[in-house]
Amino acid sequence: MSKPFASVAGETILVIGGARGIGRAICSRLAEQQANVTLTARNFEQATKAATEIRACFDNASVGALQLDVTDNTAENLDSWFDANGLPDTVIYNAGASPIYERPEKTTDQNWDLIMNTNLRGAFIAARTYARRLLDADKPGSMLFVTSIAGLVGSPRLGAYAASKHGLTGLVKTLAMEWAGNHIRVNAIAPGWVRTDLTAGLQQNPVLEKRLIDDVPLGYLAQPEEIADVAVFLCSDSARYVTGATWAVDGGLTCG
Image (cartoon, rainbow, N blue to C red):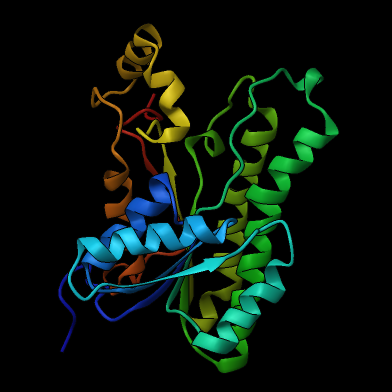
């Protein structure tokens, strides 16, 4: 008997970077839909607090917490978690370094490495670690990366950030081709402007906020839950024929 449309009930899903913003909204949606969720954050207290608060919102929600810094011993820490908990059905990579707005000639090696190590290197190490375990066990699986529309278009003053996200877009396509024969799906979501704490400064400037909204064909900035709804679908068996895709969830911002 087939599952209901976009059902993730009973699925085990690891969300790397799930304590705040879009990641937290994804965890909440998954928990609401009765998935078994573990969320990570660099700070264990932050991860535990988020997991506790999400569990309090839904009866019988299964939400665990894990401390994980994607720039430090990522493979070892993930392998330890896999050893203790088994392989999840899906790994979602939402960890990311915030954009640093600067001209390319002003970009320091330190800023470049910070963004690349978190947004691209960490994503690859997480994917490689998970895939190795799936391949060894001859199991299917799914990976979902949260990237950005900065990985789809040119982005002035965002050289390092845009490069990391364009790299992730290419990585998703390549990994999808590499592992499709092993029944491992690899996809990404590219959000546009979303109302999270990372964009709070922009939202507090009425002139700038209006300018952003005017650029969005649908006429408003997304709520994190609108990104999460797409993530849930891509994690589900209803998306079983989707791989190598990066879906822009941006209100039409990249249409023009």
